[in-house]
Each structure stands twice: as C-alpha cells, then as structure tokens.
Image 1 (spheres, rainbow, N blue to C red):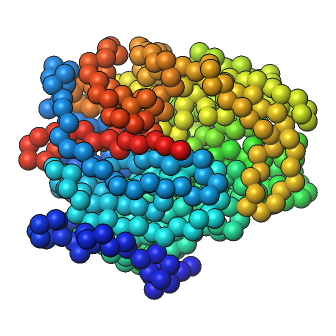
Image 2 (spheres, rainbow, N blue to C red; image 1 turned 90 degrees about the vertical axis):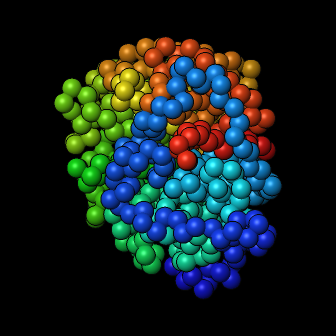
Image 3 (cartoon, rainbow, N blue to C red; image 1 turned 60 degrees about the horizontal axis):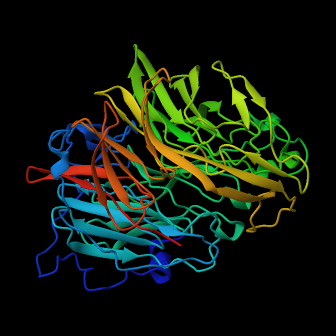
Length: 541
C-alpha cells in the first residue's frame, strides 16, 4: 500500500488557477459533502434534488422522482450550461477515451470524473468550475478497452475515485486536495481500475479491471476516514475453496481466471448484501485451457458487506467462450411481495432472481438475434457455436460487445418497467491460442465486429420479462438510460443525439444534438427550485 506522502510525489494536483477552493472571481467554494454519511445515502431518494451516489440510490434503479420536467413540457427543454473539460488524451494500448461517468450532485455542487485521472468540481447551477484535479497516470498502463472512468463517490467531506493505475484516491471535496491514496491492483500484471466507488457504512467499495490480461478479479473495501484496507473478496476461488472444482485441478488457470468487478455494486441494507456482476473468464475465447464452469466468472455474486464473504451466486454464462461479461448492473426491486434482482446480461438474456438467496425466478431474451446458444425459462443452457478449432472463424450473435454494454438499464417504480439500452450486433471470432504472459492481452482469439450489420433500441420490459414497447434506432444504444417521475426516459445515442421518451409508450418527445457520442450515465437534480438533466458527452479515439 502507498502512503499519502508517496502519492503526492507521484501525482500532484494540477494547478490551473482553480485549486484553492475558489470559484473564478474570488468567491470561496462552500464546504460540501461534510454531512453526507451512510444514513443520507441510505435514504438518498428522500432528497431527490441531489444525486448522492452512482445509481442515484443503493438499489441501482437509476430513477428520480423529480417530475418538474415531464411529458407535457419536455419539448421546451433547452441547454442551461455547457462545461468544456478542455483536455484530451490517450494511454498507450487504449483504443478510446471518453466520458463514461455519472455526475454526482450534492447541494448544488457537481462532481464528475473523466479519462486519464481527471476529476472536476462544478457549480451545478452554472457549470462554472470550482476546482480540478489530475492524477499522473503512467503512459504504459495496460488497458483493454479504453482510457475511461465511470464516476466518483462522496461522503464525510471527501470525494473518492479510482485511477487507471489501480489507485483509490480520497480528495477534500471543498479544495480538491489529496487526503489519502491506496493502491489495490498490480499494474505490472495488467490490473487497472475504472469503477465508480460505492460508499457503504464506513467503507468505500471498489473493484478491479483487467480480465483481458489474465488477472484474478476482486472486490475491495477501504475505511472512509484513513483508507485502511478492510477486506478483499476474490471472484475466482483458489484450490480447496468453494467453487474451485469448476476449474482445472492442475495448473494455474484459476490464478489468471478473470471475473473482474469493474462496474459498481448495488446494496440492500435489509440483507446486508452487495450485489456485483463479474466479468469474463480468461482467456476470453479459448475454453480448453480452463475446462469447467469457471466460477465465479459471468455471475451475479452476493457479498456480505461487513466480512467480504460470498453468500450466494447465480452464473449467467457457465464456461463462457464468447466474452459475455456479466458486469451489468443488478437492479433491486419488489414484485408481488418478493425481494428481487433484475439483470440484463451481455449474452442477450434478462435474468430475474430472488435477491435473498439467488433462486432463479425467470429468464427472457431481450434482443432478437441470439444464436451462440439458448437458455430455457428454467435456466437450462444449450450451446450451439463457439470458436472451437484453431484458425477456424465462427460467427455469433450477440458479439463480444454484448446485447447490452456495461451501460445501465433503469427501472421506474411508478410504471414498474425496466428501460434497457439494446445493441443488436454480431461478430466473428477466430481462435488463436496464446501462451499466458504477464501484462500481455490474453484473449485466445482474433475478433471482428459486424460493422455493417448493427441496430439498437431502448426497450421496456416488465418484471415477468414481457416487452411492453420498443423505440428503434439504426445504431446500437451504448449509453445508460435514466427514468424520472415525469414519466420520461432519457437516453443518448452514439451519434450525439440525446432523447427523451415517454416512459409508458416509448414515443420520442424531445431530442437534442450534443455534438459528440454518448457513452455515459445521465443524472438529474434540482437547484433553487429548477430541475436539470446532466449528461457527460464525448466519445473519441
């Protein structure tokens, strides 16, 4: 672990005239987040003018009861302000950089993270920058899929975010200056970090990235106040642990097994469980070197938040050879008296399980083209095609990007519908066996995506898996949806359009061209009695 003194030497705050905690013009920035604690986050939806945590609340619904903007007046929605980040950048080996964050808003102050170690504090009413901070990320960090960051967390006067070189940082929320920093991944082995932290009780919860480099995924908890490490939960069991029988008994396939936790967990205070989706096994496409179901890859995993112990799991794609991470959000909801969890998986199926014990309730396909295999309503799986022979190409739907990317579905308790961003694409994988080498991509295949055969939609489903409506798009939908009490669903497009749909019918009610692609998670909040919709935009390469 590093100390805060070590960290400041490695990555000082970048002074661009705004690091003293002052708004341009000399006004001192107000103290913020000091009284944000577990109790407030637990009851986050009781203060809908704020967006206190990554999904808006622990349940992952990405729903706000704010209804000042509604189906009747959304057509009058107009830009209030635009903040230009004023920075671009790439890390060697990364294919893209983009905004992927969900803006956090606390009492009129917005916190938003960007690529390459950047984080900003803004006036949420005007967009004026209060402070900015940059962590000095080494150029040789191994990244699979982009130089990105998905957001921050706030509590007890601090802002928490991770950096690409697998550090968790705590900054003073008023000034942007470092308080403490801890390393929780080995960058030499290919580990990295992109997850938005989650504050639960007195802990900050984060997960690792890097499954494409043959690392062993884990979830970690740190003390809010001083960064002391509380527990680590590995998502691939070592020999002798429960689930280890699903890996080869000889060799070290388990030690490089993947199952990274690179999307933020959800949390149920009644069960005291964190619910996290885990990533693909490694190598992604070559299953012969890791025979078995490969737990707990491609799974919904329930973890006791106090001890870090796994309580139950449900595996969505046993022995995955299609790169179907199950990292997508675990949405908590109640239906017909049961405490349930909804999960839209990259493999094209919508899973509903009992969140108290992991018991399967139902499974439904949510995309039209699925030919990698089939899963019955009771969870039985049949496999049809996968890259089995060396050098022989195999085409399958959905492709490795999934029927839904990491970006999130939302759920409205008002309409009792889920709103999922769908991408209908295929790909061809050709197996190419590679020996494992530390920090070198460990895919096991070459992949070509169908660039000329793409479609997408925002689709609405009920808890039984019945599709209620579909708003179609010519290109895949690659950004999170947001549901509101105004019976609206907001969703951005890769081509820059930001849309408002009627939550009950799917009718397009409003559209605005933002000038760049959407690959992030919009949020909503209120300042001085006026509701705002905020979305981070920018998708480059």
